[in-house]
Length: 52
Image 1 (tube, rainbow, N blue to C red):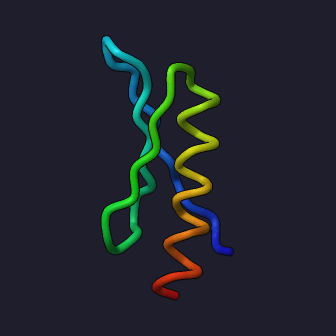
Image 2 (cartoon, rainbow, N blue to C red; image 1 turned 90 degrees about the vertical axis):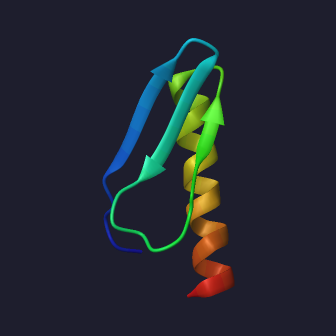
């Protein structure tokens, strides 16, 4: 897997994370920074398995 820059944003109801430079929509979310980061990493792995 290549290195990706992941943006994590704090919102009033939790955190949202997304990678830069990946075609398609990949978003992770969580109540904490770590949860959002873990969620988006799982979404990236799923996206790569499904779409290459």
